[in-house]
Length: 156
Image (spheres, rainbow, N blue to C red):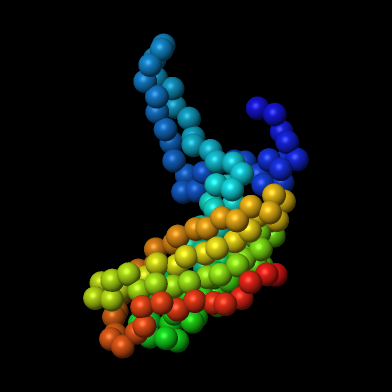
C-alpha cells in the first residue's frame, strides 16, 4: 500500500470500535483486526470523541465530549442545544483534520428517547465534505420538544 500525503494526513489504523475478524479459506483460519483509513478513520476518531467522557482517560483527562452525562436529562430544547454545543465544541477541539459545518439533532422516537445527531464536516486536507450520524439514547422522556434542533454555524 502506497503512503500518499492525503493518506498520511488522514490516518489509518485500528477501527473503532475494535473488532477481530476471522477468515476461513485457503490454508487454515486467519485472524486479524479490522482497520480503517482516510475519511472512515476520521469518523472513527469523532466517534471516540463523542463516546468518551472527560476524566475517562488517564493521560488526557480533559478528552471527550461529555455527552454521557446528558442521558438522564429531560428531553427539552435545553438538552438538544447542549448536545449540539458539546458535539461542536469537542470536535473542534479534538479533531484538527476537519472543519465542523452543521450539527443537527433530530428526535427520532420521542417515546423511547431516541435522538439522532447528524454531523456535517469538511476534511481540511482534501476539502471533501462528509457526514456522520450518531444515535443518542435517553433514559427519561418529556413531551413538548421540537423534532429538529440544529446549529447554523459553518466554518472554523
